[in-house]
Image (cartoon, rainbow, N blue to C red; front, side):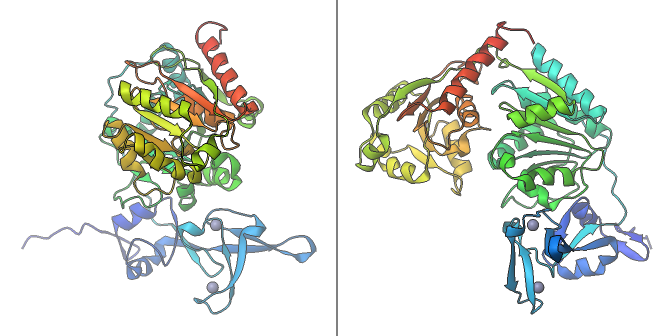
Length: 472
Ligand SMILES: [Zn+2]
Ligand SMILES: [Zn+2]
């Protein structure tokens, strides 16, 4: 009789199941809420370290100070007392990370403590594109920083081809058997990056993690995730790259910034990539002597489109009355006539929803999209495939998306939500394709804001830097 070799290795008398090891390596998870049957977790409990969900220490005047061990939140106002049905006592839970399952003081969090899996060194980069000089320089600088475990900022204008700049650095790390995370505050960016990395790293197991992402199996060596998903990792990565590091909510949420620190191993380098670094990030780069690469020019060599300001007085009142302001409807009709895809940004979902039926009277195929829209992926795809002529959108599409020959209008550009970096990003959607390097970006406003001015000044400055106004 032939002996069949068990696929499961025995470890300390217990059978080790690779899929459990692969899933939990580098993760921190609620013990009773994993993707595996509970009995599997319990029989494998020896391999896990258990941490309480919430820990308490004593602060000033003997006051209790809570800390969530999953998201590392320490904002006391985000801890809530409630009558817990599970332990029949008054429990504390963390409101900060509640949408990933409630972590309470009676929750056990589990982390993998068993034998470590080995990551592959067998990776290839299947990409035959070429770099411009400044892309090539930035890419080498980034790879060098990662090799030396230095922090690094890649400051690249919208359309500079920053994703490609990451390829050699990621390849170098993967070939050393390291585990790499690319994190970004925006789901749309994850959705855009994932297929691109899958295509060029055909031998690498890559997972894309975001809210409601499909289940993915295997030991992912490259993880592309929203910064929120990082709450579920700990001490996991040898390299962390944060793309669109200046985007909301990352910049405004210290817990997300802490999450980046907790998912990386102690000496692992962090690289930030952005077109619009905040003053805060730039001063850190100087103070802490980070590596720094600057790409002022788009990959195709054409300048960034400069926004045009146009007044659209009381646009909101007109829309509320059921009328699209005439400048805006003319602009839309021109796009339809020229068969140019378009995006029209709105300051609020409410105003956009009042406007959409009005636009659909011009063309019934115009759609709208916002953050909670379950069809948002499909709608963007429809615009890209030219199945629909245009999309009305909130700021969720301000970055991460590339649509050939897209023309862009911002309605109510003076609104608070349109910060200068949001406006720079929105302008950066235009003219990205080498065959359509120009295009229109219009800021329709009810009075010019400082943020609008700042955005335009910065775009003009970058164009000067990129075209020999100054050498870097
Ligand atoms: Zn939490
Ligand atoms: Zn409880």
